[in-house]
Image: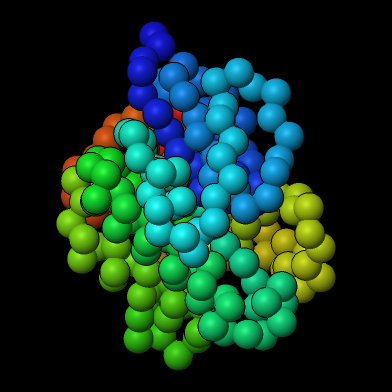
Length: 224
């Protein structure tokens, strides 16, 4: 049954975000789907609104979030794209999700769903995992009514951009994953479409508090 709910996606042009947008467009749970982007994208779906946002502009970003019932954050960059500039990397992978969470708080959006990474830890020696851990820590401190953090390992799927190292890993990891059991199972590669489906179903549950979902939980939802 259709509702009047509004979902906002940040990162809809990415691997997970693209699948998520398609799923939400095909589903009736949200009446309006709002996509916040930095550059124009094609849109033929009548219930989808594309809003050009300057994510460094507080008011622009806040207007994009305002009125949302659920905000999905699947934004991310790579050190290759940012040419090794860790500050530029941080402005995307830390500033955008943390600011989105704070704006959810300010606009009284009750639910945030966020893509992180397996191994996220603010004390990690690895820059990427440390940054993801810092994001999780900052979001958790805001005490939003409902936060679900998804920690996938290597993502399977076809990206628009070419990442040579990732393509090699995508070919090799499924074979290595055959030996990953118990605690190691969370490091198994997972298809981006499975993560997107898990995000959509979790949003419908509206789980209270701060929740972390790793491989087993994500796969269980994707099988539904």
